[in-house]
Length: 211
Ligand code: GRF
Image: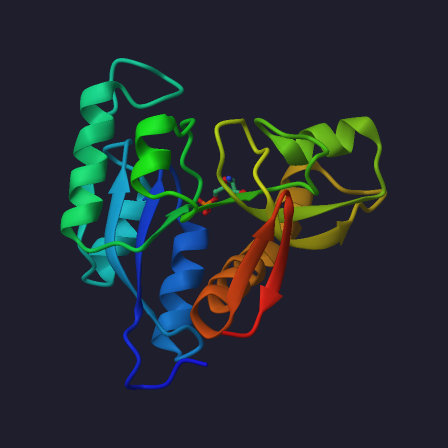
């Protein structure tokens, strides 16, 4: 269990968009719900709102181009991201709407310490617009998943899932909005496990343990 005298978990956040998940982590830290600090925020999108949120909260943040690829970091960008996060002392990387696949270099530099959140109950509906996939498929329950990142797309070991009912009158927007409410709870909960407890991985199974 963390106390005021235990060091705060140092988190790096990578995001490409609005950063509402990043905001929920900022709020949890501010409210004393999460014994952590955000040591850097990086975006691959110059005008992403996540950077504006960082500025509003006086958090170190920067845009780092990932060009020329659309779905991954090129080798130089990957090294740049790693260096910024290591220099900032990051212990854990939180992917919060980061729209690029994480490759070996970054995975090795932060081995077992990269988390992602996905807007479905994995392994259903990996990839883009998972809430639309769920709606179009006709499932009655969907949700969100926080998982460790591995080399696949949304395939890593699952830490937490929260379910969300699909309502008859749902639109893609209304469903996504309700999933996001659960995402914000799930991400801080997963990080609290890392801070206050510990996570034990055996094969694909992740369990919460007592340190
Ligand atoms: C979330 O729905 C998350 O599940 C997905 O990207 C979205 C990011 O939203 N990976 P935000 O930028 O945190 O608001």
